Length: 304
Image 1 (cartoon, helix red, strand yellow):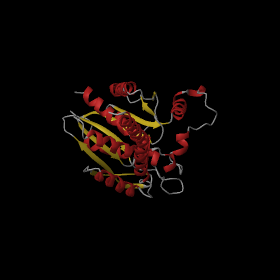
Image 2 (cartoon, rainbow, N blue to C red; image 1 turned 90 degrees about the vertical axis):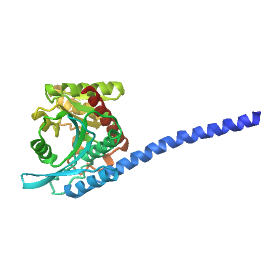
Image 3 (cartoon, helix red, strand yellow; image 1 turned 60 degrees about the horizontal axis):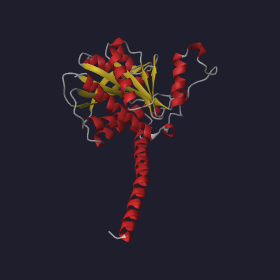
Image 4 (cartoon, rainbow, N blue to C red; image 1 turned 120 degrees about the horizontal axis):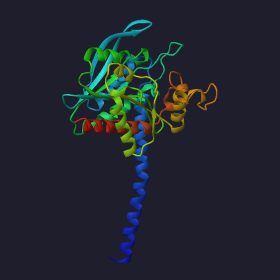
């Protein structure tokens, strides 16, 4: 090859490398924007409309969701609820991956957008399901999107009443997972859940992922499963500072070092008008989906 040809090839290769380097962030940004848009679709004035968004997104990804209705409700009286279920694979025992899709009503009677709490988790579960359906698994994976969590974990309790927990090998629950890259996990779901907690810790170490374990963790649908004796862990995402502030608020006692009256940012966002698209980060949804899928695969392998 002549000097000029070698120079031309080198320049072309350099240009190609530049294109690749500039294209990769663009692709990542496009994906993050798409996931953020999917989360934003849940900003609806009713939970019935949120249900339709969930079903539409699942069907668009090729899943065939089942809707299980139940009689629930809160202080306002009886109200029909709808849990949504997607099943992947087969097996005598099953691993559950769960999140609630309903949002809370605000004091003025309007519905919160409910994107941090908890549409981010919902879209992350759909992302995890897309990964898991392509994975070799020895357990049946049941992905459940619960209704009426905000009314007292009613959807989860009704599902347990209908199906029991005898065939459950483990449960992974996600709540408040829409921004930040620090994964939080609860350690307060009973001795039967110790192996699930350990799997989370192993995964964090293997992936060199920032994680914070909470001896006391805010309640979500996981509490319905731990009360029934099932092994379960509840997960969420925040920025690192916020995760540690929340840890101190729940576990630091009277000498936690936080300013008097201080409220961690996440609790100023959820259950308020600020639980909106501005708080959502698309890369967190991607990270959460990949992390949840990896945890389910780890549990599947360990429980064989």
